[in-house]
Image (tube, helix red, strand yellow):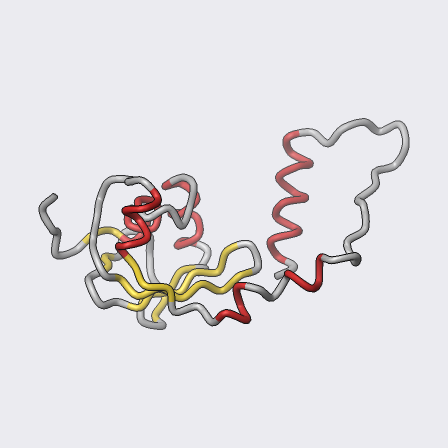
Length: 131
């Protein structure tokens, strides 16, 4: 596999499996949840070997160091060799104790039925904004 000198950051985040889709990676870049070397970026910004990438996702603040550039999505065993995780252990385990015995069941009013697709998106946005 030939090594590239630069790759779009949204494509790299998708290919190393930080995001499930490239659209999610692009949206995260546009909304300011991704930074390269502590600088704000666009989805079309490029990442190089040795760059420090910070990603805020699902309440976690991931810190990655780029070791290898790839353009195509690869399997998880290969993907983890393309970056070094600099995220502190406390950050990765910060919700572990919080969830145990503290989470309440979410309830909806009786008779209003299941959430629509639009409702589900609003709920997910609300939960993402809480972190």
